Length: 114
Image 1 (cartoon, rainbow, N blue to C red):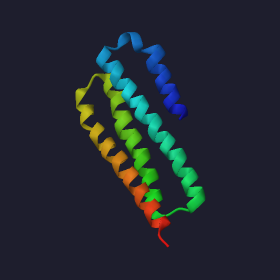
Image 2: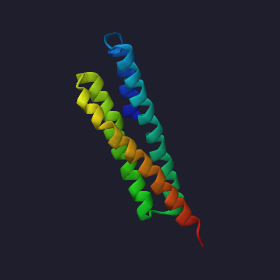
Image 3: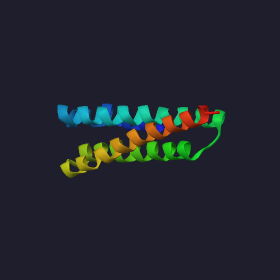
């Protein structure tokens, strides 16, 4: 969360005037997804404290982290470098996010079963 704040502030205050509207929107998207999934990690920690660690919960945590790095990280680098090929990495982060939420759902279902 701290890194998300720092990166968001960097975009809003340090490089905003140097970015096109398109790149500014890309930076905003990267920051939003960074925050959403960092909050997911916090929620997952609370869930873990209440239910214990199972393989699905552990997988979810790793996938959320990997998703932040691949999705948000690739967009941050794309904006800073202008290298459009970095956009090819972004969907891998999105897939990681989807798989993370699915693994959490599986964990919830398995923990709810008698």
